Length: 218
Image (cartoon, rainbow, N blue to C red; front, side):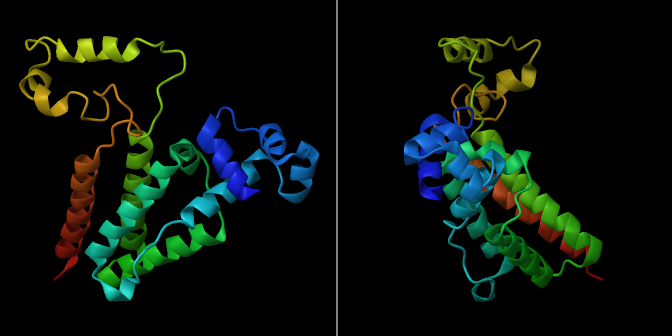
């Protein structure tokens, strides 16, 4: 059932994902799914559990904390990119399941091993996980369905023609910003992944965590 749910979500997106559509794909009735799995949110939670289970993370004891965070970041982005329609679910609802809880414990253990304790541990976790989940979800954000077929061309024209007298920083850095930063792009992350930008972001998150540890060191 979960595999069929993942395939359905990949095919039709979140808006088209219903228990009836899943039941049709499985050749059964919606009531049967409700009885065995639950409602739509519970089915999506099971799909999240399955997708998170596709992550392959290193044993934290085998590498340093910075390298572990880099690797885990890449793995999370890899599995979400494989199922981009799931990205909004990971942001919009708190999913409590075994793989997610184990992953939370592992991340906390890595940060604890790096030297974060108490309140700083909570803040470091939120800074890292919030940045990672939010970044990937924004990268993969889909265009509103009512934008029309020509919106990309129109938006590209707008960005590329912004007057320097009103937008001096954008104009001076247009070659680096146009279609490359999250709010000035006309291609989505599934179509044009921001690989180098993601790697730079991860390094900035890690640098920030390391700097906080250094400030706490007597």
